[in-house]
Amino acid sequence: MLHSTTMTLPEAAQAETEQLRAEIHRMADMVSGVVRNTAIDAIAAAMTIAAGGAPTAPKDATQVAGELLSRATVMQTEIDRFLSIAAGRNAA
Image (tube, rainbow, N blue to C red):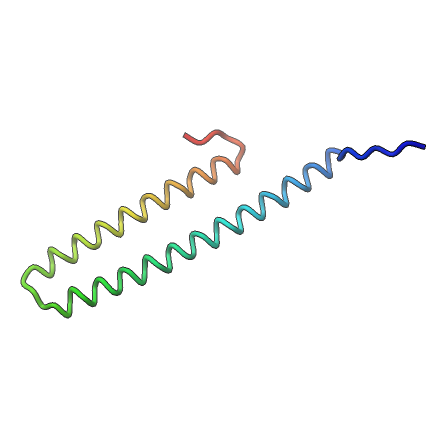
C-alpha cells in the first residue's frame, strides 16, 4: 500500500495558521518593543526639556512630540501593511 507524503488541505491550512500565528506573535513583540522604547525616549526628552528651564521649553517639547508622532505614524503604517498581508491582500 502506498502512502502519500503530501499534505492534505486541512494539514496545509493548519501549517499556514501556525505560521501566521507565529508571525503575529513576532509582530506583537516588535510593536511592544518599539512602544516601550518610544515611551522611554519621550520620558527622557520631557525630563531633559523640563530640567533645562529654557524659555523655549514649550517649543522644544512640541518638536519632540512631533518627532514621536512621526515614529508612531511609521509604526502604524507597518501594522496596517502587516494586517493587509495577513488578510490575504496585497499591501500598497
